Length: 311
Image (cartoon, rainbow, N blue to C red; front, side, top):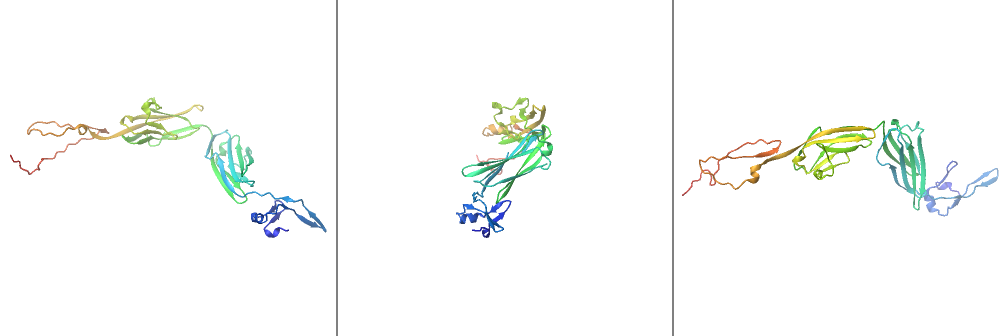
């Protein structure tokens, strides 16, 4: 039975294009053949065995998922992975800096057909990167019904480096009792250097005296439950031993303490003084910075200013 009238198209380079709905409504199409006539003779091709493939693109990922940083001369490997319906055709196309002139780029395609789906991979490799390879790398995954682009950034440095500076200046202030305070440094480095924080000349470690301090992955030092004794000089030291690189800066932390009156904390119940006697009143104030102390006086009587006393 001729098939052209059902949306099926013959292409001499690609073969038959048969809509999926035609296959769903005619399950008996397990074999096809092509017939042609020439000068009164009929020629028939062998039977074509239909191979049913899926059309669903389940997932596409580009590895590494984060941006990539390298030193000139190192190798770059990117893997574009697609999970598709079993037996489905998928095509990968890469776009990257210097695509037209970079002959050192290798691209390998792999397929792994599992019981219910197929995994397809396209692996891009540059054995020795240069600074000119810096830029956006895009993997286009193309199927019969869909195209999906994933991109990542690749940064190639000429050599290892460490850049270190203040984020909030060389002097910062916190308040006693503050739940958390972070000493911040502005860092740009590759590869990631070794990091150490010092308070004065003491390395901040797991020792009990530093149990309220924690080093974060972004080079910050967190102080929990800030105390007055946390004030002082803090030094951040960054090292790349292999590249003989070392940078350090010192941050001075001032811990402000709200004003407190010592006598208020230990005051005894008030008692009257004899009229005409000489008394000394003391006010001891504490705080950082040092508070200013002022005195105020107000006339007072337990029975009111205009009351009279009866004997």
